[in-house]
Amino acid sequence: MSNPLTVVLTKAGRTKIRYPATLVADTGDRISVRAPWAADGVRDFGFVRFEPGDVFTEHFWRTRWYAVKEVRTGGGVLKGWYCDVTRPAVVRDGEVLVEDLDLDLWVSADGTAVLRLDEDEFAASGLAETDPEAAAEAVRALDVLAGQAHSPAGLPALLT
Image (cartoon, rainbow, N blue to C red; front, side):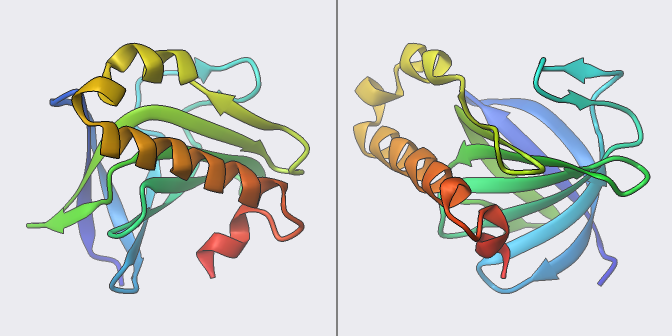
């Protein structure tokens, strides 16, 4: 399966980024793609740096409110997992459409750092007022991801 796709990430009704990816697998619920780091230059979060040459194996679900992205250097060394809380993915016309709901989780390669990110952005987004059901799903999804990250099997258990 080396079919080309385009991942389209939206946020608050606008396209945040779109980038080419290669289909790795499609189980009917989970679609997995591989893509190089798509942004310009280096993005240093303090706890991890994403940079040209990094490779993301991204897993999106049609029924779950998150995406899990395994991040490796170009040489194959695991950096960790970056998880986006999203609405369930829609796959159509060669595109994976994903709506970012602000909440994120970072898990280091060794599993010792599990960081909940952007909770302030989520609170400021107003989603709890405009779509309380989606906001509740988003918070639940972040809790599920964090719980799985802290479990002995870690995030890879979601990918089997």
